[in-house]
Length: 195
Image (tube, rainbow, N blue to C red; front, side, top):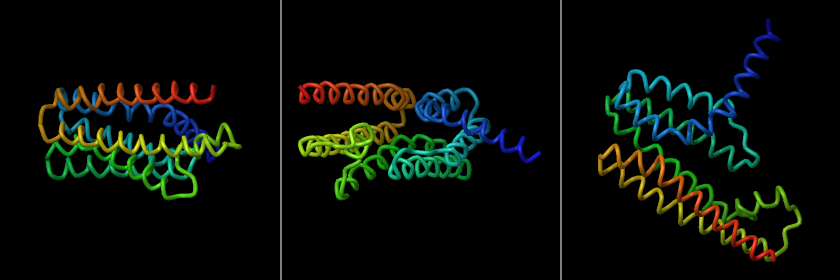
């Protein structure tokens, strides 16, 4: 009985590990569709279940990323619960703002640590990072700080504007395109600097 229960939880954890990133990425679209079609009665329990699963199963490669993963799950639970208690659906819109604020906090605080977050990530694949590489990873960390600050401000603007279509378009589309663009530019710059 205990063995089957352990296997069930293990399978659930594996599914959650794959599904959680998709659920977080799809959050704006899910909220937009859910509020238009079902309301918080259906949407809130579904979101809370997703965030609880994320909280229980999140494992990051670095302690800072584990902290972020668990913190963002707790913030999600709090926002959804507050939305239900206050009967105020606009609380659900602030999740992308919270994600950007937490990411900004994690990246910015790492600038005061012995190694920046980007340096720690780089050392996972290249343990003997040269001094020039350390300087580069520090700059990249600073660039991501600026990005998360600006992206968080835009996410906040879409919340305050009160236009659900604009909110879903920016937070569920444009924001991810900008992240992809920044990652692509950084990859090109890194390749050129290595040459």
